[in-house]
Length: 474
Image: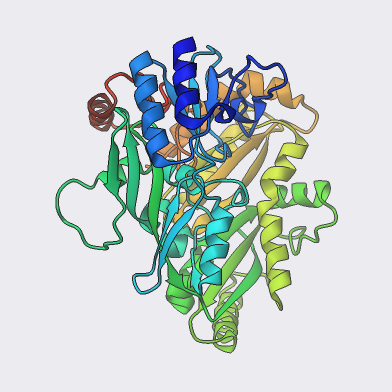
C-alpha cells in the first residue's frame, strides 16, 4: 500500500492525501458517519481537484486492488459513505470539485461539479434569476454529487420531483477510471439505455459522479406558507387532495408532523414557538409558489382553507405574514430530527407508502408497536405530499435509549418493514440503502430485480472496488 500512497500523492499532491501516518492529522470527519453509528479507519483520504485526477486515482486504486469509498458532504443517514475498519479503503472526497461550470439561462440549466454544496447551487441560481428547487435540512453541508448518488428527495418533491427528476446529464468516472462525458442539457435524447438514471441512486457503487447538468426554473412571483392543525391523518390526506385542487402546480410543499414530534421541538428548543400542536394530533405545513402575484397566492390559500374548514378537514390554521415567519415555520419542521437526537438514540425509518394508504398503515403499525413494546414513542413526520414518512421509534420515556437501540432495533425494523411490505411500500424512500439496510433489502426487494442489480454491478464494477458492501452484498 506504500506504493499506492506514493502514486496518489503524485496524482493529487501530497497535501491532499491524508493518512494516519501523521499523528496530528484527524480523519474522524471522513471516517465517522453523521449519525455517529459507525466509525471506520481509512487507508487514506484523497481529495482530487479535477475529474482527470479522480480518474487517475481510480485507476491507481484499481491497479492496487484497493476499494474506494466516494464521499461528498458525509451527511447520509444509512452509513453509506464512510470506510470500514480494515484500514485498507481509500475515501475519495469530492469536496474540492466545487465549481459552477455554466448557467444556460435560455436552456434553463446549470452545470455544476459534484462537490458543490446544495445551498451554493440554490443561491447561485437565485442570483442569476432562477430557482433550483431541491431543498433539504442538510443543504448547508450536503453536496450535489451525494444528492444524486442517493437520489435525494426533500421538501419540494411534490412539485419538482427527486434529484433524479432535476438532472439532465452526468459526468461519471467508471470503476476502470474512464470518464463518461454525459453532461447534456437535452430534455429529449432517445439514443439507447438511460445511463444517467443508472448512476443516480446507485450510492457510488457503479461509478463516481463528478459533475451534473441540473434543471432550473423561473423564480416564483410569490411563495406563501401555511401551518394547519388537522384532526387525523385521514383529514391530512383530504387536505392534500383539496390543496391539489385549489393550488395545482403551485403546491410545492406538503409536510405532516405528529404531535409527539412537535412536542420534542417545543421541549428541546423552547425558543421556537410551535403553533397549534398542543390540541391537535397532527399539523401540516403547506407551501404555495405562485407565478402571478402574492395577492393571487394569498387568495388561493384563503379559498383552500375556507373549503377545508367547511369540510372539517382543518381545525385551525395560520398563514405566514412575512418571509421571516415562513422561515420560522420551516425551521420548526427541520428541527424535528435534531430534537429527536436530543431526546436520545432512536430507530429511524425512511419509508414510502401510497398516500391513500398512509392512515391505515400508521393506525395498524402504531398499534402493533405499542402492543409489542409498551410505552414506545412514535416520532412520525415527513413528506406526506409524496408519500414519504420518517416513521421513527423512540424508547419509552423511562427507558435507556442506548439499550433500546441495541436490544430492539432489529425487532422494530422487522415489524415496521413487514408492515411496509403489506401496504406495498418501500423501506427506503430517499435516504438509500447504504450498509445499514443492505441485509434487509433481499427480504423486501423483488428477487428478479435483485438479480438484475447484481448483474449490473458485476458488469460495471467486476472487481467490486466501488463502495463494496453498500446497496448489495456479493
